[in-house]
Image (cartoon, rainbow, N blue to C red; front, top):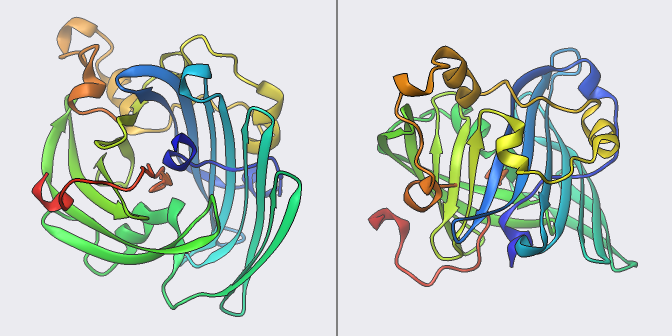
Length: 302
């Protein structure tokens, strides 16, 4: 399902964004079968006073992309242990929200799905984290984010508050639209997706070969929104302002070489060639991309 391919979370303002340092902020276009169907906005911050990481994201697709609206706000300690998160998704008239907190080694969540409440309480294994922070967890790991390495993990899938085992295979550096990026093959929630990530953990693109869904980070918001309406009031509630999406490698690359003729422009069908969680997602989702269960072989052969 399309909604499982993305995550981003809700409209509960908790104040930390006002004082936190922005580590990453950018707009990505969402493509389905190579067709531009929406956008996702991601911001990662660190609040030095509270010693917390914050992940905030917002997804919007048009009718061709399922007419989905999703949002996420997640908090983690400075060593990326989960603190809390709020998630919401709206598809047509069907809504779902999750309000989760973590204490004494457990996740305690309230899920409202179609107006029906459900309480969740689960033990968390040591080292478990919110999937939206995957690249930061990899960066802070003993081996770091480097070529020819792999990372086994257990993460909370924010869209259903489930604990899922995953593995990320970091391959080698490749050229992505003129930028140097690591190719990462990820297996999570019985799904497979491919990401291109900078040394700083910034996700340039993610795609699901099975589902044909992809996101690609762009230099300007208009390239992602594609004439779709931006809900300014909702974004102000979620982010504290309307993000400009300029604090990322793609925007910096575009500013460093503003003349189109001096660099190789990304082809119009780039999404079909190297397109693309928490995101998060961030693996993610980063943003991670969460796809339907894959039917092909292990991604090591990609």
